[in-house]
Image (cartoon, rainbow, N blue to C red):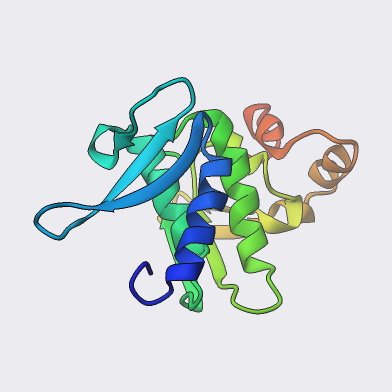
Length: 173
């Protein structure tokens, strides 16, 4: 992206820095052997941190956000368990980022995410959540959370879906 869309890349770095807690600025540096290095200016520190010094969760969030900001995204994005390595409170933000990308008028992708994390589901609406249940016969059934009138009613009252999941409302009854 830096080579083919440098203006977009700089905008993306600024937008991503705004979304990663504690990061003031992200920029790049070319190493002596020609590699592109990412530098993260963390609020409260004088010297920047390089990617290899950042947490796996920060780098994973960075990778998701840069993928979503690509000027020519793929038509379909499938992500398995984005929660791995991420701070739980960032999951709701990430869910919204995926939604915003998918809902773009131009340049959005269909986004399919699997998760076992209620915090991620908190960022979604009932019509965006599909529940897969493996039956005793080994086959899975699928249903939309919004098809359950109790779930729909509680979500309409403001209860987050993750809380409903913890309370077993999304599980088979």
